Length: 449
Image (tube, rainbow, N blue to C red):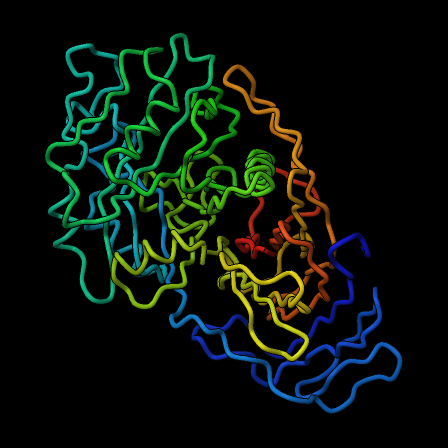
């Protein structure tokens, strides 16, 4: 606390949860510009905390978020029967939609493996006659039929090269078609075989050339062959939470890689995906069978259309979690004017308060910690390499933390004095990573210029 860039003067108030519209803070306990470092005092709605004088009357209202939209809940990593060879036969698109709607999702991206799609999804054998055949998007038309004004299903892909023997990293790359009207879904055939011939970076380049919003999925994993080999860094997003084994040590390693990208000035988006292969698995699932929608990727978008969702992803207006609400991050000036939300930037000289909002639908079995991190420009010791599974040392520092043990709303303010080039993100996470941890949330960063 108290390091360059941030002063940890925070206030936790049970006075409002995560907003779902562009409607600025209302009746929130709000900090005063004179609050002292390291002071924390709960105050009721309509009051303002003062480190030295208790709670006073709240002055002018906080500015409204100047980005029209609302949060939409989705799953960006889902496998369907008939297009992936390990779904157990119980995940047709119709069932995926039914379960997704039941669990409150607004959109789903099908990401079936390129190595089995269109070939023979009933076998896992490496048969040369089946390599690189396509079609890669067999549910394109069915997904469009299942979409309506209240739900989107998009047919994407997960490019899946592998080494022989499978003891070296290659990686899996998620493809979300950007422009549904222009995307050549009939003509695209991804090359991922023969084994050892295609790197993860080459798969990424194929997805990028095809017109995909590209995501490196589960970049770190106990299964070495699906770790990413870092041979190309021009991805749009990193999957900072893969549903298998909950929010675990390997997801936390990806967070370090993400922060390293941010420290290098890259606007990489942090997303999540369940990696569900059997849609009827009930929450919380098991280590190898994560349920659909765990975690959720929340996207702030103008409406529930695919162009609007893609625009929200590109802008980094994204949160990831399984707590029942997005973890929101906003920056305000000393005059209480709203300056930026996740994915946005603000003038370093103008930023005064960071606000973190969210909610836990249920109390976790073990207390969680809300941590606010600062990512300094150029602060990463980048150890990523094709022949290594060692994560980088991001250099991000904790500038505020507090326990989160109860169900309910979070509304936290942290005083800010930002330096140009800084990025700031927030996580609700286990105190220490472990297997099968739930009740976590991630807010994409804001950027100081």
